Each structure stands twice: as C-alpha cells, then as structure tokens.
Length: 626
Image (cartoon, one colour):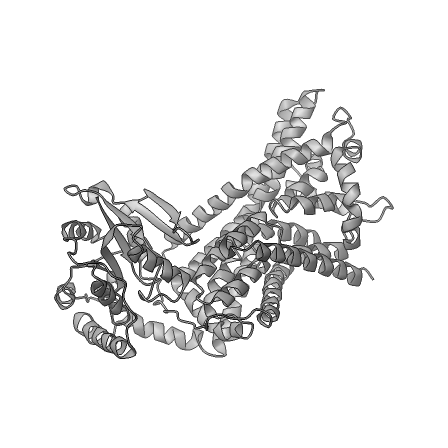
C-alpha cells in the first residue's frame, strides 16, 4: 500500500477532492509536536478495483514549499520529515490560476517526488464552452495531468489509476533550498506563458469577478457594502428565525405539559413528573428553542464563504486591522469566532506572524459566539417583547460591540507585545461563484448538529443537577417557592449573592452566571429551572403560554426580598454587557492553552476578560439605575 499526499494552495479544491477519494472513511490527527490537523483516509474500493488501496494524506494548504506560516511548515514536515513514507504527490492546481500555482508543481518535482497534477475547477471552463488542454500541460510538465470535476466527482477514478501506475522515484527526496528571486520570476513567467497556451485566459467569469470587485473592493463603497452585509446577517439571525423558534418553543412546552399530565401528581409520581417536565425538558428546551438562530448564523457564514466574499472582506479590513496590530488574515478567525471560539482559535494557525497570532487568539473570545445567542435572545425578548426589529438592531449592536472591544484590546496589547518576525499579508482571491445552496444547507446542518451534540449533554447534566439542588432537601413540600427558598441551591446562592448584587441581580441569577462557565447556553436553562418556568404552561394546559413566554413572565414577576424587581432595564443591560465581554467557556480556555502552549496565556485571558466584564457590568447598572 502506498501513501500519497494531497498538496495544493488554499481554495484550490483539495479538500473536496480528498472527500471524493476517501468518502467518510477519514480520520483527523495532529502532526506530532504541533496543533495542526492532517486528514488521512483510504481510497474507496470502487475507485481502483484492480489496484491496492492508497492511503491519502490531506495536508494543510500551502502556496510554496518554502514555509512562511505554521500550516505551511507542517506541510513541509509531512513531506520531508520522514514520519510518513510519502514519495508520490497529487498536487492540486486550480485550472483558473495555473500561472500562479504552477511553481508548486516545479518545486515538488525538483525535490524528487513523483507527481500527478489534479486540475480542479474545470467545470468553469466547460460552462463557457472551452477546456484546459491537459494533454499539452502534461507534455510541458512531464508528468500526468488529470482534469477533476469537483461537483460531480469526474476524473477521480483516472487520478487514482494514474497514481497507482506511477512508479516511485529512484532518487532521494530532499528538502529544497529557497529559490532566488531571479528563479522565482523565471518560473512565474513560464507559468504565465503556459497558462495562455493550455487554456482560455479571458474567461467571462474573470470579467464578471473584476466588475464586482470594482464595487465590493472600492475604498469607500466596499466598506459600505461590508457593513450592510454584516448588519443584514446579524439582524437576520434575530427576526428570520422567529417562526421556527415559535414552533420549537411550542413543541417543548407541549412535551413538558404532556409528560406532567401523563405521569400525574401523586406523592412519588409528582416528583418524577416535575423532574422530567421542569428539570429535563424545560432545561433542554429553553436552549434548543434558539437552535434556529444558530443554524442561520452558520448558514450565513457558509454562504459568504462559498460565494468568495469572505476573502474580499479579509482584504477590505486588512488596513483597519493593521492599526491594531493585525492583518487581513485575522479576519476569518475573527469571523469564525462569531460561530464558536474553539475552531476560530484553531483557524488562527494560518497567521504567519507569532505576535499577530497571539493577539488574534487573545481577542477571539470577545466575538459573539453562537453560545451567547440563546442568552441574548432571552434578555432582548424580555426588553423588547413584540418589537423584533428593535431587538434585531440591539443584537447587531452587541455583535459589533464585542468586535470593537476586541479590536481596542488588540490595539492596546499591540503596544506591549513585541514582534519576533515581520508581518506580511498574502491572500489569493477566489473567483465569485454561485453558491450551491444544498451544499451550504448540509454544511450548516452538520455544524448545527455538532453544536447540539456538544452542548446537549452539558445542558442536560446541568439541568438535572440544578433541579436536584432546587428541590432538595424538601422535595415533599407541595409549594414550589418553599422548596426553592429552603433548597441547597438557595443556600449556595445566598453565599455568593454579595458578589452579584452590584450588578442589580439576586442569588438566582448569580447561580445562573456561575453555571454558564460550563457552557454559556446553560444560563437560559438555569433560569428556566430556577424560576420554574413550566408551572404556568402546565396551569394553562400548554395551550396559552409557551415555555419562553412563561420564563419571561416569571422574570417580570421576580422580586428581591425588599420587593424590588430583579429584572429591570438596568440589570438586564448589565447582564448583556457581562455576557458580551466575559469568557465563560472552559473549552475555549483549554484550546487556547493547547494552541499557544502557555498556561500563563490561558490564565491571563480568562482572568482579564472576566474582570473586565464584571467591572463594565457593574458600571452599566450603576449608570442606568441612577
């Protein structure tokens, strides 16, 4: 069995080809001594029925064998480090970018590898009635060339067959010394001439891309469209999801009521029905009702990525980011942080400068991740019930507020942290393409499922624990308020209440804030359990009030011991500020420690962000309550 590495620039279609070659039989590993992932998988049996299976290694995207980032260094180590027996390479080249990518083929050949060129994006030529002359390209390069249709999987069988038949090189594989500037210019000139000979150079898609870029990359109008697009995305998260949220909300409310009515209200059955209805279903349902908003967030980001706009956005914000010590490469990790900080911090590996990677990793948790959405949606619904447009505007303001605070923090840290290597910004702009909505939908659905799978066990466990703590030791008491006031959680909460009192909230909210460190979403489920949100649902047979309406109603009626309301405009605004700035995700702290290989970094990030959040929340309450 031979091992073949897939090597190619970012956005060349390499990972799509890897999926066609291996199907679902893949595993992801870290290259030893680093945190960069390598995907590995066996070729599907039907692709080469007469040959031994091939093990494919999908390396991180690289523009050159002369590494300038951590991803490129791992690709180089994979090829030359000796850990993997790689002597054959499938180098993936975008057929619309031959002139700029052919040097990678030349470098691999010079290093001694046996190379087969996989030419992707050929469907763009076919749409305009042209094609790339792969036979001519094969003669010029002296190596097999296979045209690949990434949409339908065309050419994948031929690629596997050519790789299987390709003899291994008889020369030693050696790491290259960096090319001189003269040699680089010479190779690029040859690539430009070769690209003109093997394919139609003036594709209409280039003209349309240039035309769109005149507007979207304009120094002024480009920024206007950027803010419009981002504003539309974040406001749509709030109002577009409302109909689906109402259905999910009603379903969980009906389930909670149905379970309680089915089991009954006897001495033992009553405790069981309360546990299932108020603890399990209410706790999980309070968060799951916001899953439609999370799906819309993932869908919007995937849509921008598939159209090719994300790379343009990175180019647009390169200059503003440079003012705070970052460059355009930080944009994608920062934007990914609006979905989840964990993969966003991993995405920061592509930043070549160690200082800029440090800054980006530090401020990513300020971005409003999807875990904050359920909390924002609940608190904004409390403030602006029946006013979805106003709620959407405030939600967008919270998103931009986190971004602005993160950039200010980066600017301040930039004055302190010293750079060890010079910074540069290199990003290839892909062609604009019509997104495949079903692909975007499936990817968004997969990411949403991953979110649910990751958070549901935590939410379930915490909801059960909170129900136990709020109902014991006086489980036999028929009065829910008495059980709560004399419960274990009440004793714990009253001890920590002085810490959260300056924010204008009581011990119940304090318990919710502490529980949010397991996962931010659990704040909502904690509120549902602590305020017994299902009681009014059950009282009305589940027909009048939904679970979310019941929780908001309970929040409106919640009182302090002195009779003052717990939730006021000032206290809810303070909570919003706290959640906007706080780092309440132990998974994020864990991955920050792993990526930066520094416990000092992880502790500094965790402590500084939470202290800042607490001080700003207290200040917000003090100002607004005056």
